[in-house]
Amino acid sequence: MKRTAFSSHNDLYINYLKSENKHNMSVQHYHDTYEIYLQLSGKRYLFYDNTCYTLERGDLAIFAPFDIHYAESRESDYYERYVVNFRLEDMSKILDSGEFHLLKQKINPCVVHLTEDRTQKVFELIKRVDEYYNRKGLFSDKLVYLAMLQLFVYVAECIDDETATDGEKISPQIIEVMKYINKHYAEDLNLDNISDIACMSKYHLCRKFKEATGATLLQYINNVRLTKVHSMLINTDMPIEEIAECTGFSSSMQLTRVFKSVYNIPPRTFRKNQKVL
Image 1 (cartoon, rainbow, N blue to C red):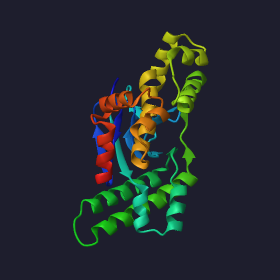
Image 2 (image 1 turned 45 degrees about the vertical axis):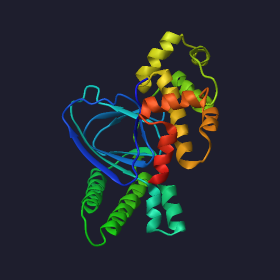
Image 3 (image 1 turned 90 degrees about the vertical axis):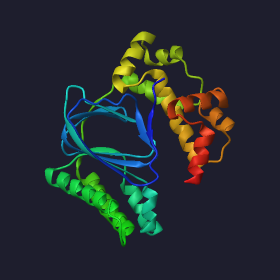
Image 4 (image 1 turned 60 degrees about the vertical axis):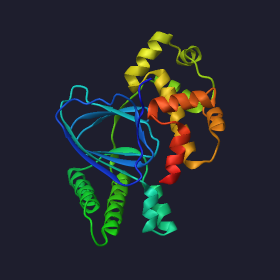
């Protein structure tokens, strides 16, 4: 099984990239944080929420924690983008409970296209956050939070006002398969019953699914299960055996083997490390 790309950001993470080479994610990708993605130039193809989006300058994507997504270059050799990963809960340090609740309601997962003026404004706000984050000195932490708040409020306005970016919808058969897996991940899933649901031969289904999602069926099933495992390890005290039973793994040994093959760390050690942070 190929590795699932996962990044745990216990602090703010900002990354600017200008790439002159083709770059396809080798695996599906997710974080335990929110992510703001701004396309500045070039072209990227994003698979997210049963849709393939062609990202060009001005396209803004927001992903919630554990949202699985995948991006590739295809024929494009060049692209430029800014990414911000953050824990929205950190904003409760400067907002009261009512303000934080309102902000959380406004930051919704989406893909929208911004006007040129708004693209430039979001770019400048991200750069300001980046600048304050790398500046050490008096009130530097508060400056970061205030700059982040400005970014969030402006992005929320953009989400309300701008048009959602059109994407190429995945075939209804593949979407049905994905919905079935997302709903029944805790059950025993096999290629025979999934191909029956899709009304396709097993060979045809496997080929079409990989073309549409960038993952094999087994990778997708394990990715869905592992996002649930990951969340439970962080947010609950459930025993590993119980988590395995709730997420479709045949035993805690199988869960541990798959988790370790993907993240290079056993789930118990991962949980222990999270509690230390």
